[in-house]
Length: 160
Image (cartoon, rainbow, N blue to C red):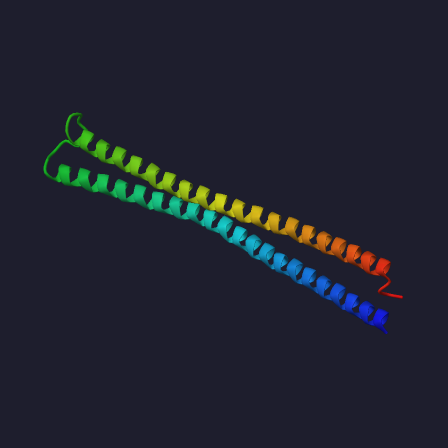
């Protein structure tokens, strides 16, 4: 009777150990899934940042072109020769140059934001890979512990 009770206790202990390992593996799978989804979202956000930057740069360049055109019209309406060097030509050229620099700055900011988001996505990908490695390690460790404890119990005679 005592041997049978020890065997039942060993089987129950081994079963609980296996269930605990299974829960750990499932938890790591959930963490991996979340990290993969976070990676997907970060990569989408990076592409979106680039697209928004391109749109903002294009809109800015259009506004500057409109401003230059309006400035030329106003100057011409006051009798200023708009294509002569030294005055209005330099003025409108300066506006266009500053506008181009601002447009380049808008693009650079969008590229920096996208880069940061891609790096965040890569970090999430690494986290997912680590969770996968931990999953495998936990499953192998749990199986190893189960085999070792089963072997010990068998040598003790818990199952005879």
